[in-house]
Length: 139
Image 1 (cartoon, rainbow, N blue to C red):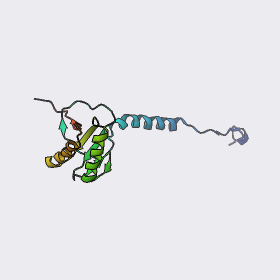
Image 2 (cartoon, one colour):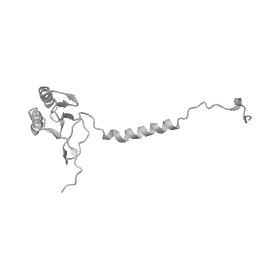
Image 3 (cartoon, rainbow, N blue to C red):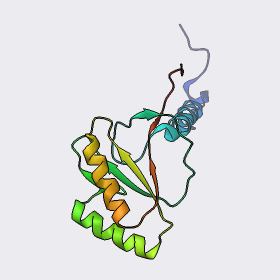
Image 4 (cartoon, one colour):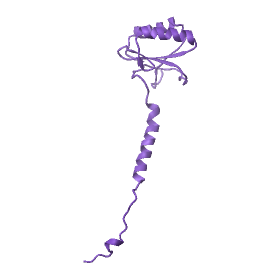
């Protein structure tokens, strides 16, 4: 059986088909665009649920307390003594500074009050207790 076309006349395909690679790139881009706002940055804390106003994005300092009552200032671990000194300095420099307190829902109330006492002693009056949105229907 003879060939219909000689071997030399068959053109080689020398380009790469980018369609599937572009499809995958757009799929990943859309996935990141959708999931990025849902990812919370910082120390993993199981926040309590409650109704509150949305916090405005501003230059606020974030204090986080994890489930083991470890304290983090803007995602960096800090001792209570260091925190007291930093908050005293902040209270002197900027008395209108806002401090967001993110505490794990399983913590004892005493641990949260200890942090609030440090803020009060430092003369910081603007603080917000961060909670998760409560999606349950209200009675």
